[in-house]
Amino acid sequence: MKSTLPLSHRAAASLRRPALLALTLASLCALGACKGETAPALVPASTQARPPATIALSGKALEAAARNLVARSDKQYDPAGEAFLGDLDGDGSDDVVIQYDITTEGAGHTVARTVKVLLNTASGLSPLPQSQLPDWCPLVQGIYRGRLRLLQLEACALPMPRLEGVHDYVVKAGALVEAEAWSTPEFVQHELAALLDAVRKDKDKALVARVILPVGATQLPLYETKLAEAAKAQGGQVTQALAQQYSGELFDAARLASWQAALACAVQPGKFITSGDDGSLESLQNHMSVAGGDLVCTLTVDQSPERPTRPVPGGGEWPVDAAVRLVWGSQKLMDGQPDAGSKVPAGSLLLVLIDGELKVMGWDFADFPV
Image (cartoon, one colour):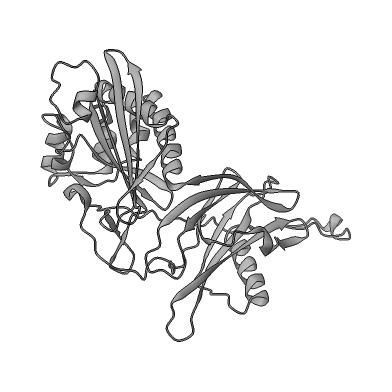
């Protein structure tokens, strides 16, 4: 759960980059909301002589108490930092993670980032030792299912640092312990596995939430569908509401079958090959037997400066963490040759990794070699 205070770690940058494959990112920011404050229960007169029970703080009151505690202990604390609430120790009460930047005097350039973890115990807030936190530049993504997820950035001092990995931490015996860690390409595969699970369960409405919307109807292969007609009547935009209404057309059985085969191929273990002048392109190619022949899939994770950008609050744009391209089909198609008689499903997916979340940007784009 995020604070409503403005972001400070990424909102300052504003270099505009050309969009990949002429697609635009129109709506990419998700807003969080804090829980309401829990009012303390009234104590009956007959029990007032007993020692008062500790009333667990929650919501805004918990966040305020954590901020006050950190401000008293750290002179470099920045009140513009973010607060994240969630249960880390499994006791049923929200704990607090506070993140703020350390900047140079005068110029205000970020040189480091501090993350404070405070457990919400029966005796009050208990800060975890800083020595348990990583020495690389962290960016808190949030607290999910009892885990604290940190994004590992290239360096805090860089204006647009590259995402180098994703790390999950848990609390055990009062200590913060790393539970899992992925490089950026490995994390992309991890997220593709979650997408595969949704496709296998045929949850077309759930898949809509993974697509960047609204988007121009011409940027999706809708052809002559009711969704295309409805979008045309609403200015040519496929909105969230329209996509939910016509989710069965957006993700029909044939498309889901093709995606299922491709994603199953892409998440298989494989070696990523690094390319590009700055090592910003990483790709792997896998093979998988399917009905009709041998499916070949190529997964590319692009962190080059030319990757797509997204708007940031206050104006300007920020590059996505990675542009992800998945292309699949027969070997001939992968070699750029026509293969009209193939029974192997073919297609393509373009996704973007944004703050540790993989979003679908488009599919079956025009430059697919068919």
